[in-house]
Picture 1 (tube, helix red, strand yellow):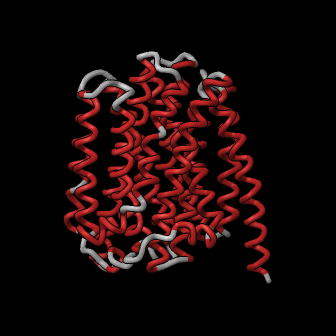
Picture 2 (cartoon, helix red, strand yellow):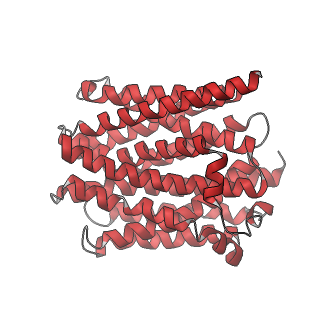
Picture 3 (cartoon, one colour):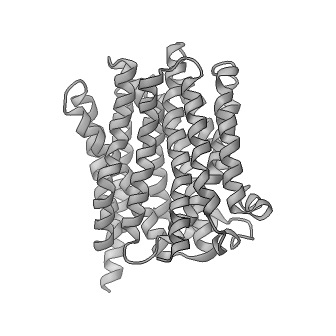
Length: 383
């Protein structure tokens, strides 16, 4: 890997940490603030859904932003605007005005995410692709985990947690200054055809959507779930950290498996582990076993995304790769929107344990679909 390619890769990963940290901080922070004001779980779900809704809408503006400002400027500008949105929350009425703020946050964060991930998948080439992408996923997970940890120090009152989130955004833009714009920034001159890409890689997009569902559901409601089950706010934030911390230590082994075994089989195995661990959460809550269960659930669900990225880079390049990363971003937004709503509905309708049970059931559906796809791929490879 040449020096500039390596610099671009590191800078893109840095930009992704912006997404991870702010997402990991803001979702539980805003949910806990609303929970403390006795806002219902269903309404918290509707409010949380505005972030992924912004992500879905942003995909249609990404090509225009890149063409007009260049990829690097679009990423930096998005980070600056997102920082401004974050520090605005304490100055607006809780819940009502937050619908618009969360939509704007999702919209602008998605621009930097989609562009940066296109860089990462492009530059993580060669036989180590899945392992490089696994390292990226680990760093992303670490940034997710750092968000809830901040809450344990700052609490949920006042400006402090919001200022930390905005400051991190500003610091993370510095490495982007060293990126050299390359063809990946200008290949996507035509409007993105997300629907056309869906026909080429339906299982990949389904996998991304499933990961987004459980990711957004737990980011929004795992702290709320934990509080309802008897944890205090600090313990509830640490429960979310346990969910994401497995990604930092277990993504590389998953990436190694994806480089040595059929990716669809690895993806199916991750789905099985996610479904089982989610089902175990109600039975292990309040015991030491809860922490490894949450860690395995987080690592396995994120592993689905790691393997999907590896297959994306393996199968597509050029314009199709950029379209694919945009389609991933769109599907992530749709899945996160679905996850936020499902989580709120499941807790409101079935009590706190409705959250992990619902996640387990939908991942069982994914396992069936993924297993059928894996079987078809293995048969095609042997024919």
